[in-house]
Length: 284
Image 1 (cartoon, rainbow, N blue to C red):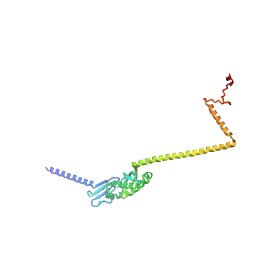
Image 2 (tube, helix red, strand yellow):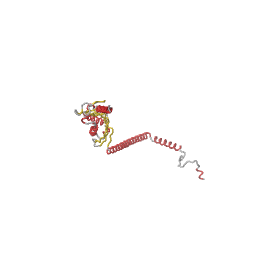
Image 3 (cartoon, rainbow, N blue to C red):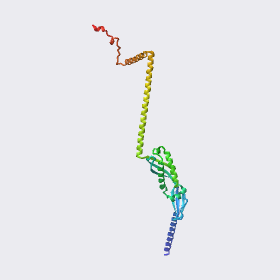
Image 4 (cartoon, rainbow, N blue to C red):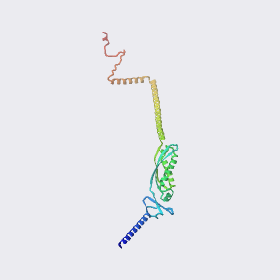
C-alpha cells in the first residue's frame, strides 16, 4: 500500500517537471526570432511604438507579448506596370515601365510607420503613372520613337527623384514597350505610302527632266553637225556628199551579197536587164 502513494507522487512530479519544461520551451521560442539573409526586422513595442533602429540578419531576443517583429525584404525586386498616356499632339500611347526597387534600409521604421510592409505596391504604380503622363505630354507621338533615349532619361530621373521622397531606391528604370493607337498606326501607314508616292513622282520628274536635257543636247549636236556639213559642202562642193553616197551603196551591196536569197542584177544603159541574151535571135 505504501508503494501506491509514492508512485503517484513520482508521476505528479514528472508531470510538473514536463509542464515546466514545456512552458520554458514555449517562452524561449516566443523570445527568439530569426532574420534571414536579404531581410531586416522592424520592432514594434507596445509601450514605445516602432523602435527607431532596424535589426539585421541572425537570431535575436525580444520580450514576448510586449514586442513584435515585422520582417522587410530589402533585396531588389522587379515591378512592371502599364500606362495609357496622351502626347503633345493628342495621340494616345501605351507604355510599359519596368522598375527595380528596394527600400532604404536606414529609413525602414519610417517606411513601416507611413506605408507598411506593402510599401512598393502602394507607391510605385501611382508615381510611375504620374511621371509617365507628365513626360509623354511634352513630346509629339513621332518624337517618342526618334527621341526615345531622351524620353527614357527624363522618366528615369523624375521617378528616382519621386521615389526618394518615399525612401525607396530605384536601381533601374526602363521603358520596355511602346505602342500607338489604331488610328495613329493607320495614319502613319498612310503617311508612309504618301511619302513613297511623292518620292516616286519626284523620280519620274527628274527622269523626264534628264530626258529633256538629253534631247536638247542631241538636237544641238545634230544641228551643229548639219551646220558643219553645210559649211564644208559650200567650201568643197558636193564631192563629200557623193563620197558618202558611194560608201552607203557599197555597204548595201555588201549586205545583199552576204544574203543567199537575194540576187542583184544591175540595169543597162537602155533600162533593160542584161541577161546575156542575143536580142537579134528574137527577131527571127
